[in-house]
Image 1 (cartoon, rainbow, N blue to C red):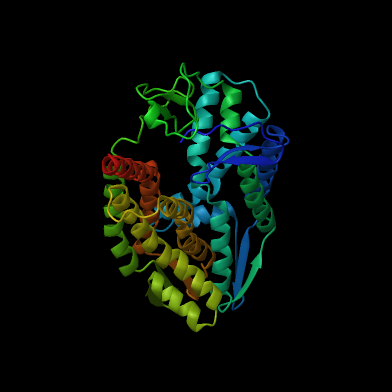
Image 2: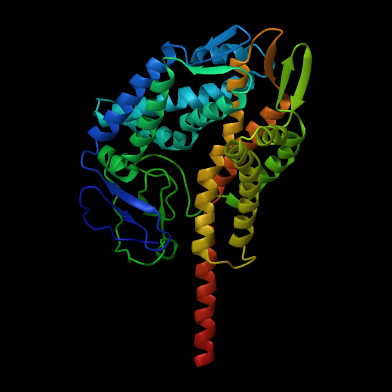
Length: 408
């Protein structure tokens, strides 16, 4: 829907009157503020990678690990994909995003095409920055291990906590609409647009990358050079294909063990649900609920939610579009938090390496589960929420025609 945004005061934001999505935020220092947070985050991440992260001691045996040792230990197992999850989502992607924000915020002289490229990648990678989820996984693993020995934090633990907070804040202070306008002004539309009416009814479309308004028949955006159409092409087909694949993989993810605990020569494989039950029996009720919600409830409800959105967009159910849009935003946001169980197993595997006394190794179930989380995230991204509003607009148009016919 077309919305006219007035001049905003510092510290305020404009939201869509229909779906309440934030359109524009105006910060006091739109360049320096996100760059300062990103620079601080990068310093904290550098410190976090130089010193020991966490440690554990049991029966006189002590094990201390750093960030890079986590990768090294996991790579030594048969499931190097787990190390890849940790490396990408907890270190490389967040670091790249912070560097990009610094370059754009400090207005470093770069070729325009490079600015466009890194800005496009920045906002596409935002959902894949999972440093705070990894940190939550570390805290959960502490609760799991406290019964087996003494748990301690290293010199890099607090800097990594600071990095997580600074990274989140840097993204909060970054306004995509404003940033793209500073790279290049939005292309002009050579016709008047009516506020309050949909873009598709006025033969214009939104560039989903840089927020420019373009003619409906123009597939390439002249500002960010991305390709698009009035609605995402084959959105439902892609969403359903990814959804069905994730459902099929979700079965082995829950049936197969996600890790094996070897103690005194005997191995004990455990599934995700086994871990929840163990925490519950040990009296760690809040942590057991967190793991159950994040690893069992959220993926299940997310798949149900995506299926519901697809059915609703095709007219099955005819639910309130405001409610369906809220479900879409909820599905898109909380789905990434299911990665917490993958990170818990990552830290457990790296930390509990005490020879014949005890060691934990990942099992095939955790790879299946990680892929399920990634596929459901892609499914939410490929779904076009505007299809729900299109269905609502068609229904209202039919009702208007019927009322006019009855009046005539």
